[in-house]
Image (cartoon, rainbow, N blue to C red; front, side):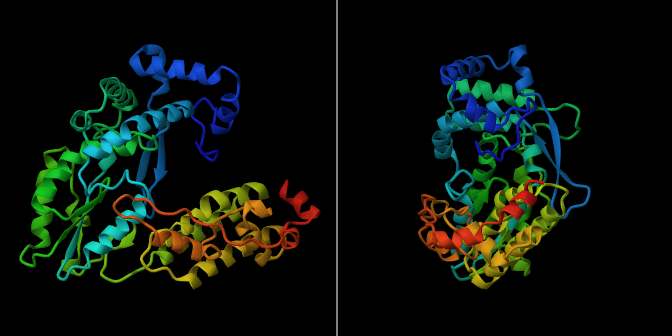
Length: 413
């Protein structure tokens, strides 16, 4: 698990477990514990590991709307990653072809598939909005999906116990509550929704879906978008899902259809404006926060910059100037914090770790390398080449980039 992941209720986070796993005998002890829990998840002494712990995450740009996250114990997240590895190949084999959520590089694959689908003359796109999808998918559909995929009985029974114990009976209208944030959550949702996707494909074969983000493509101009949405809505009811017709969009109606945050279009378009705007907003929030300089640098590196640097890896068109401007803004923010040179901060952030830098993939500094990786994407398999590091500055340049002792003293405050 990444060191930036929050610890569970015990307070033992990934950093603690990385140390503990080095203790002689600890891996064997954990393996024994995992095997016992796997076969006895319903036992009372294990229930606290799965108890529903509600965290409400505000939804972007939606006042009063929250995303419920059920926080789990850190060590159980590690166990669920192991279980995911055991069932993922089998689950993927059972999923419909259009469901790409569990594919490698799924974000890039989905955007490329949508772009390719629009290249055929006359093709129109219709997006479906599944209301409160992860909260409303009935547990029975997940169990049926696991049975169809042939998930091993021991793991199947463990997951059923997990869903029962992570469920809260105190929130009306939430019959299931797939545990978002859990390594198993995406594959469980996709298995539970698989029968619905299959039924839609029987009517409209050209479909792409990332979990509940669904787009239907058709080139029959006699078929109205309203008819497609009506069919999808009626089918959804059979699987405990609700389609919010008011939020469905269609290119046939001259509406903007998006998939995974990117516009669905025949043109090669960019998501730079939206990605940079969100990253800039987050950067301003971090810089104004009453936290140490070190914490600000850490949050900028692991939270802010990834909000923008993913875009050149997925978008069809990628404007270098926009990303250079973002790099400059990051440099100015850090320079203002420590009274130093913005350009040197950009160099220091982007320089490979082997050269003494931080190796951060700034979207401007790494743009060519990000786009080279984008161009190697195999849509069918989901694989692409890794992002190659740029040629870093010289050791002398890095010494100039690094803050002075006085600045380091300031950073420790």
